[in-house]
Each structure stands twice: as C-alpha cells, then as structure tokens.
Image (cartoon, rainbow, N blue to C red):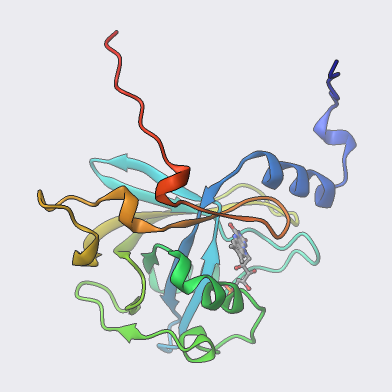
Length: 210
Ligand SMILES: Cc1cc2nc3c(=O)[nH]c(=O)nc-3n(C[C@H](O)[C@H](O)[C@H](O)COP(=O)(O)O)c2cc1C
C-alpha cells in the first residue's frame, strides 16, 4: 500500500523545493527565446517556465528567474527590460542539442546562434531574429514584466504579446492547420529528463458535452 509524504514548502531549502516543483510539474513546453540588448547584441536561451495564457489578445508568458545560486538575473530578462521585444521559438527533437548548448552561461553579449550553429532569420515586426530550424516561431512585443520577488529563485514573468507567427509549412495538414503528429516537440521534465512527443506517445479523447 502506498503512503503519502506531506509537508510545508517553507520547511524546504529553495534548491530542494525548486527540484521538487520541476519534477512534479512536467512535462513543460520550452520557449527558445531570442532577444537583443540596447546595443543590438543577440541572445538565445531556453525557458521551460512557459505557456500560452490568452488567445485574444494572444499572450505567451515565460519566466527567466533570478538564479537560486547567487540571485543574479539572466541576460534574457535584462534584454526584455531594455528593448521590450522577444521571439519565442518552439523546440523540436532535431534541435535539442543546440537548445541545451545555448543554456550554458555565456558572458553577456555572446550570440548563442553563433555558439550553437543555429540560423538567424530576420524577423518582420521585431528586431530579435527567429530560429530558422524551429518548427514554429512567435514574434512578440513585451507587454509587461511582473517580478514575483527579489530573492534567488524568484520568477520574473515576461508577458509577451504575439505580433507575427511563422510555421514550417511541412507541419500543416490539408486544411492548413498544424498536424500535432508531425511537430515532434520536446518538453522539459525534472533533473536532466526531457520528453519527446511522438505519434506513439499521443492519443485522442473525444470531447464530451456538458
Ligand atoms: C530546457 C531548459 C529549460 C530552462 N528553463 C528555464 C526557466 O524556465 N527559467 C530560467 O530562469 N532558466 C531556465 N533555464 C536555464 C537558462 O536557459 C540558463 O540560465 C541560461 O544560461 C540563461 O541565459 P541568459 O542569461 O543568456 O538569458 C532552462 C534551461 C534549459 C536547458
């Protein structure tokens, strides 16, 4: 028979609570965020505190948190504050290695497109470039940034409004809609674990009325 472990999160150290939350709230989609600083230096980094929250207006939110280790902020947050634009690229299995490499802590000003070999494509409405190899990219303007705290581990919500969308046309079905079985998206889980969404791992449920 299984038992339940129950406890108050305030009794855990932040690093342990961080691990627990990321293992339990999974799988999480990955925002591969391209930003620029006020000098035009390009940055590209992944964030799995990410989802869609509204379709009218079209709003995506991701969170470059303050580092648990030393309470410093991420370049992506600094750039989002400085230039108020971001391109959110989705991550499929073909670019997981580059995505992982881009998450290394490079010095400010380093362009992770160059470090990873991914291809910059000029955006139409915003200055940060999109990732050519990404299946879907969203050009966004930053509507608002909400800080959830000043301590290490505090989320910083970047509320991004979609102003242009790019979809690899190989992923579209005969109705011009995205075919979920062709996307091959990956998602982040706890620790070093990821999940790959293949046709075999998917299923449908018919909508019930009520
Ligand atoms: C798959 C993946 C998901 C990540 N998700 C987040 C996240 O949601 N929030 C965060 O602060 N860091 C996240 N990270 C870590 C950042 O990508 C990492 O700190 C990166 O160096 C930040 O780069 P920047 O300082 O250039 O913005 C993630 C890393 C990986 C590999």
